[in-house]
Structure formats: C-alpha cells, structure tokens
Image (cartoon, rainbow, N blue to C red; front, side, top):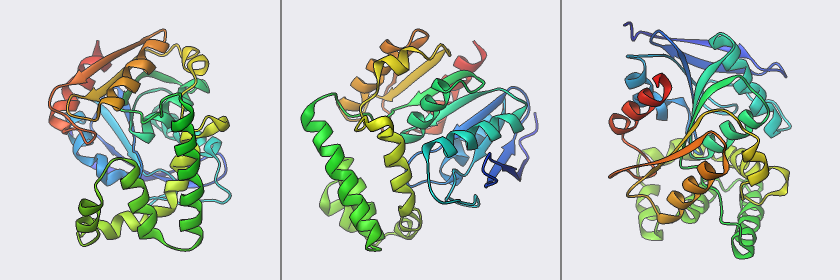
Length: 269
C-alpha cells in the first residue's frame, strides 16, 4: 500500500484554510493533535497508520501551515474537523490526542460523521470544587500572560499544570524545541476554551458524553499519572459505546509503535 504523502488545503466554514497532509490508502482516519503541537507531532503515528489506512493529519487552526481567523470559537474548530472529514469522503474514523481528544469528543457530540472514535488521555479535571478552582485560575493566568506577550511563561504555565517540575521546565527553556512551543503559545487559549466549553471548568459532562453513540475506545498509558487513567475510565464508562484500555509502559506521549496496532485493531474490528 502506498505511503506517499501530499499536502492540501481545505476550507472551513468561515473560509479559514486548514492544511491537511494525506498518506496511505483505505478507510479514512483523521488525527486531531493536542496542545502545543502542530501536525508534525503526529507524523510518526500517521506513518504507522498509513500502512493500512488513508490518513489525514491536519494542522489545527493557528498552527503550522493552517490559517487563523479571529475571533476564536470552539465551534469553528469543530467546523474545521468537519471540513477535513468532508475531504476524507464524508465520514472517517477519528483519533484525538490529549486536548485534541476533547475536541474530537465535542465534535462527535455535535453529530459529525465519525464512524469510530479513539481518544488518548483526554485531560479532564476531577469534578471537585478544588479542581474547578484550579482550572479557573489557570485560565485567568494564561490570559494575563498571553496578553502581556509572555509566550514562554505561558508555555511554562501549562507544563507546570501538567506536573512538570520547575527544574525540568528550566532545562526545556534552553532546548531547541522550546522555540517551537513558544510559537504555538497563543493556541493554548484555544485548548483552554475547548476544555472549558459551556462553563464546565475542564470537567466532562456525563450527560453530553452519554449522548455520543459512536463506538469509542478511550486509551490511557500505564505509566501516565493515575488521574489520567481514572479520567479515561470514567469517560469510557459514561459512553454507551465506550470502552477503556490501558497501554502498558506508555506515558502521555505514547510511542506510535505501541499505539498504532491498537488503533488498527479497533478501526478494523
């Protein structure tokens, strides 16, 4: 099967050009990336899946080669995904990674033509007042940092929220990848809006999730923080067609060689 790649632009509902990289042949699979990433972060996974599927790996708006249109709204990102699915032939399997998993879940709840849905570690908060308070404080501080042009500090804020130690963040600031993350810092506000849609403070709505009938596999890494595995299980349990699976030895950044076979099994089963 061909694994050659080519890039095209598809137009979203508001006219924004979304860059899509295609590879492989067969049943279409769309990849939705998470925070501080463009499609290059999913390129290794796309390469593995392209041996069996037609893979559409796209830059979410404001990232990579995709354009952006103000003002931002989560609804526009859902329309972006809808445009990519339309380019895939009208329906597709969808893989959402981290906050991209939350976006994919929102799209499924809106009724997009997603035949099978795979979610890797959607980073929902626990439904507790302390967690909701922390989420609101994060949103406020992030907005202040981005308004002040302190892009590096905005990146550090997210990493700290994710549990990265200050010493490790300090080392990362001097690493080559830091510049790329700073370039995407403005999109942290987009992921924050996706997570907090409808005033949920990053907590998933059981009622909304329960309305998603799409067969769904919710994945977590066996070496990830325990709360991510707990959230993955809770999301799966709330979905009528959901099931959870833990990938032994994997972290929040799963190895494509471990993730791809599981996705292939689910999408072809």
